[in-house]
Image 1 (tube, helix red, strand yellow):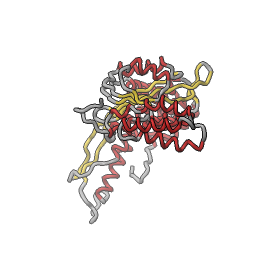
Image 2: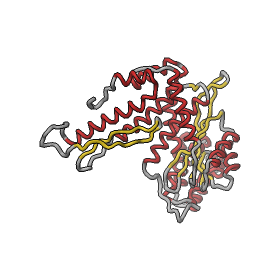
Image 3: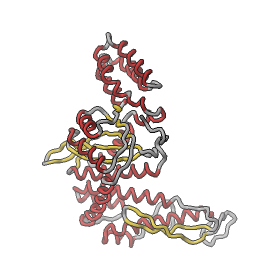
Length: 391
């Protein structure tokens, strides 16, 4: 098999997948990645095997086996070597990302599997053939086990905790209802972000948030120094019950949006937004409170309801000033989770209405697990001085 930018998969391998199901998917990944690595080495050398050219940079030096643990089991790849040792194929990491993409496809396939035709269509796009519903169920059982293990994995210290929710349409007892997807992310002492947990429930009532937060604590979440969230009443009550002594930062983005409901004239919206941003962008809490007091006095006569609202609500967005200045912009809103929500929506909108809560949780968990994996292998989000933790 030669590499020309796209791979032509061996017909016999596709036939094995069709007859034996996903047991052959690891073999498919191994063959494709091995071929890509060979092509990459050939390009690096500047010559085909046994070819003598003035452009040749090095000599091929066999292969070294490398066993990688994937969610489809262990796969052993043949990593091409060169004599000088100065070559390592990017295709291996790209192949592992393809494996993660395959896992995502399986999750989406199951959810769309309410219709056998949809399952067949997705599988045909994936590997050029179709499989039986029994084979799909077998693959999904393995996927469910992986996702549940991720949702129940042990947690540790996270000084910063961010909470948010989004909604998806789910069928229950013959009716289509809006189900709340409760999500939590955190930042550990190494400055790495983590997606800590996800839950699907029929609403954001206190009991649902409380069970969710208690689950995080039961899994070992500790050392929380600040919670950032919106002011939803169910979440507020649950937060006080589970994390009663932890400072709370009300999301500044939502605060600014909420303020617009108290602006009496559209022409004032821009001016009010500028005044609120000045408060939030102040260098310290004392300056922020000074700006707030000026804004309250400014609008007392022209927009009295706005002035009262500012006085009662804006202080809830100033907790952040007790924390390191370098951290504030990254933890003063729930915008990070909002971006995750948009990615979740990009994947769930093809489903439309989920057949049940379990199906919804399955796909959302798969999306979040992928993002969390990327975060762990990516850059540090912020830097802590461990000797001088937040107040």
